Each structure stands twice: as C-alpha cells, then as structure tokens.
Length: 415
Ligand code: ATP
Ligand code: MG
Image (cartoon, rainbow, N blue to C red; front, side, top):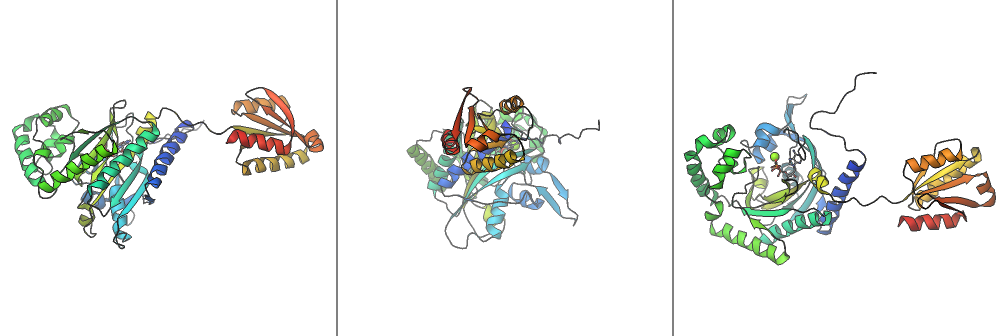
C-alpha cells in the first residue's frame, strides 16, 4: 500500500458525531445571536500580518509566537487569522459600516489559527463564534453582551463561571501600568523569560502568564480596580449593576487582563471548571477602530471557542428518524423507488434509497447497519396493488399501506 498522508499537527478532521456537535454548537449560538438582532459577517481567513500586530499587540503571545505568518507570492506579509475581532474591525472600517450613524451588531464564525502546543481543547486550527458591537459606550451594551454570552452557554447546557474586570482607559491605565511595573521590577527574577523580556513594553502580560512563578508574583500585584478613573469606575459599577438586574452571576477578578492588548474598560471570561479552561471571552475595545484608521468608535465583543463547547456538550439532539427505500425487482421498480424516495424527502422525511441489490434479507441487514428506523419496500407487488410494505425496524412490525398513509406516518414520525 502507498504511504498514507496524515493531518498536520494541531489540525483535525471533524467526522461523524464530531461534525454534528460542531454544527449544533454553531447553529445554537447563531439562533441566539439572531434573536438579539446581530447580523452575520463572513470574513477572510487571511489578512495582512500588520493588522494583527497593530491590534492584538506586538508584545503578546498570539503575535509573537502563535501566528501562522507567511510571505505570499507578491512578497506581502500575510497571516492566517488568529482571532476574529481585528478582521471584523477592519471590515467595519473598510465597508464604512459607521456611515448611518447608528450602532452595528455583527457576528462571525469560522476557523482561527494559532501555533500552540496541541492538547485537549487546544488546537492549531480551531473555531470561534464571535460577536461585536460597534458604536456605543453605554454600559447597558456591556451587560447585554455578557448576558447574551451567558444565554448561549445556558442554551447549550454548558456550565461556566463568569469573571469580570475593568482595564480602565487611556486616562487611568498608565498610572496602573506604572504601579504594576514598579512592583514587577522588584520581582523580576521570579518571572519567566518571556515576561522579563516584555516587562517594559507590556507589563500587563505577566498577569495573563500561565507559568507558575509568574502566577505567584501576579497574586500579590497591585489591582487595577484601585486605579480606575471616575469614568471607568462608574462604567464598571453600572455594568455590574445591570448584570445583577439580568440575574447573571459573576465574580470580580481584578487580575483578569486577557491575552490581547486592545481591551479597555470591561473584560470578561467564562471559565469551565470541568475543562479548567476559558470557553468564551471578550471585552470592550474603545480605541481599536480609531487605531486601525476608522472614526473614533467605542466597541465591544466576545468570542467563544467552538471546540471547547463541543467538549462540554452533554447531549446532542437526535437526528430525525431514517427510512430506507428498498427497491425489490426490475427496472420499473428502480424507477418507482427513485421517485418515492424523492417524494419522501420533499415531505421532510430523512430518506436513504438503497443501492444494494439482491436478497430482501440482505437489504434489511443493510437498513439495520446504517441505523434506519423504517424500511419501505418498493416491489412488483407494490406497484400492482398500490400497497407498500412499511417495516418499523425498531418494533419489528410491518404493515401494508397505501402510499398516502405511508407518507402520513413517516411525516408524523419525523416531526
Ligand atoms: P487561552 O487562555 O486558553 O489560551 P485565549 O485567551 O488565548 O485562551 P482568546 O484569544 O480570548 O483565548 O479566544 C477566545 C476563545 O477561543 C477562548 O476562550 C477559547 O475558548 C478559544 N481558543 C483560543 N485558543 C484556542 C486554541 N488554540 N484551541 C481551541 N480553542 C481556542
Ligand atoms: Mg491562548
């Protein structure tokens, strides 16, 4: 046999049940998003690398280490997108979605790429479903977005703990940054190599570092919530108040910073205790649109990791019952069976037309093997009498029925 070519490390096939889980997660989230009047945007998978460097931040793990960057044939530096917000913001600007002066609520879904060490719930190609709200500074929007995320998770039956924090703004964050930097310098030798190297450029990254030593240092660090300006403090208080009004439970984590630099004010994460990982995360990014060349536009959003949600799904709704149409006889029978199968599908019945030939016993074995619930025999007798044999493969019963009655029963079973 020829040598087999395997999938690339960190890339996966979603086959059978896995593919169904994927669709279920995405479709469920999509339905909730559409009820909140979010509109879908379909964005490219490849963008100029500088889009990510400028938005996510040069001194972040995602940009420094995890991006799939390459030079295209025209000599341009492009990247497989590691996340969706940067592209959504670019699209918002490029398509002038700010033109009507209202706010815009967009969602996207699709593959993201990060060169990380693969493990359970961490892949190099993974999928996100994300939502972005452009054009409002109102804390009601923050609360509603978190509430929407909560609703998606509840609808999927996924349990996760919500943590929130505020990262302040241009006015108050520099003061915090100074205080943090002062503290971190005193503990420099306890930090990992990456954090030490990035200390001056991006001290907040230490708070998001997963290395044990850094986590210990982070535990005693100054808290950003002690440094917020009046505006950010009020905003944060309002968000919490509205969340309580919505009945969304949360805990405050003053060290929550997220792995991307563009966040301001509200940040949040839904953490699954079962997985020990974040399943959905987001926050405000009030300067990003402007920083990427658009008009000043406060905005916020989140992204959920589809694979992590798949791992936490308790049950997948069953597929509708399956009927196998079994032609039994000559050419005329085959023509009739083709028509019968098509008609059943038109009526919404999940139908397989058997391509097997030969003994009826073999046909029923085939029907069992593919997990069919019903078999409908189309044979010479059926053509003559107009009565079709419908076999209930679960109950092991069969009846001869006029075609309309067959359709009626199968439709009923399918609804
Ligand atoms: P983590 O801390 O687990 O690395 P992150 O902070 O890098 O996550 P975000 O950039 O906020 O993650 O992305 C949002 C969500 O996308 C995460 O909460 C997670 O569910 C999912 N996600 C991120 N990276 C991966 C990955 N490599 N494989 C699978 N899912 C991922
Ligand atoms: Mg990460």
